[in-house]
Image 1 (spheres, one colour):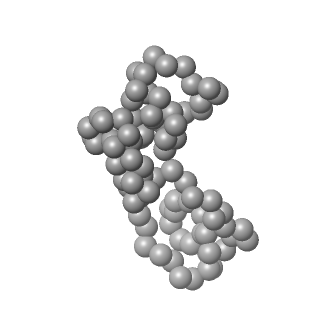
Image 2 (tube, one colour):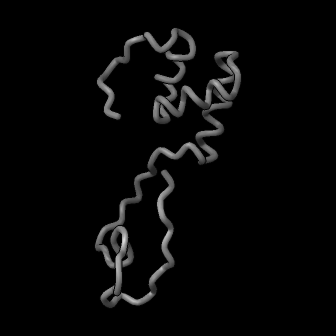
Length: 93
């Protein structure tokens, strides 16, 4: 489900009407951690690397990488051994 995009509110005063989320500009700490994003160029590069190393179709590699939430090791295992392969650690989805 797409996230609703709202216009940027340059004033830092009280907002009128319904609002979504919080004012990031007013927060004291902003995380610089890069989150998993399947639209990023790194995701595309990782999928192409999986396609080269496994010999599988790029679309299949993108799907496996997406399901593995960007974990290349897990995606590779699933592409080579199948989805019945057990993961080394617990996964939270």
